[in-house]
Length: 367
Ligand SMILES: [Fe+2]
Image (cartoon, rainbow, N blue to C red; front, top):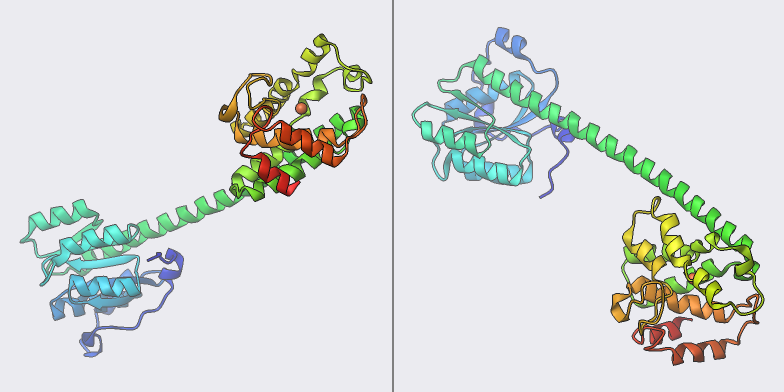
């Protein structure tokens, strides 16, 4: 059962649940009451099988502004706490049924933030030790001394409130961190968009290529029912897959004729350059590996690492398909765009050699 926020518990009002509460037993001494009054209302479960002791503790706690609920046994207390948890519990150790030590253990297990104070007649030192081991935070002895009782309640309450304030600070810090993370992410994505624009401005033939590849890749990822995180990584990797081309000479990018072997070797550096450019700002290994691997071939004849088959990261195999299709159907400095049917035929012929044969049918469905 989810635990209600401590803050709301502190200010929740409970119905009185013991018949003793209405018996008109004389109130706790006014001097004691005013001396010990809690500054804010807090909630408390008192567990005691002796009616007189229960009545005394309830009236004392109420006089210090604690809202109380009561139980006569450990089992009854658990039922009550399941319905209405309280941040503080005071329990006798010796009770019929499973007893106080069992109750302390159960509370600690189910509501680890609840503070438990045990009351003992002093005749069960082992039980007291076991309760403290099980997570009880304070104890006091019978016969009940009001100062001692009140001190235990106040100390437990102070601990609770300090913990609650610390939780609030922690939550506020987490919110601020999350906000900063989002801001950073936004800045990063703007920088990415600028990088891609820079790249495509240098090579008019590839204008819009990265975004088209991204669109195709995301369609395939949806078709393959890849999870959200992988789709996000894929989208970013596809947008950035050719970013390493900013490191290539412009003359090579826009060369009208075929490239010499030396020039090809230079161009084939772009996946490595891309990984190197993005490495310091993008710590995500999966995205970097996808960028580095987008020109690997399924038969191991690709570059730069000659990876083969499923050794090529899945995002890289996906980008390879979309990248090739878009390149074939776009005009380049050295050739015109090919018709769609011809491009699809080239992809089919590359199944198992250039492309992952398992991915190709799905790609042909979405393209
Ligand atoms: Fe590329």
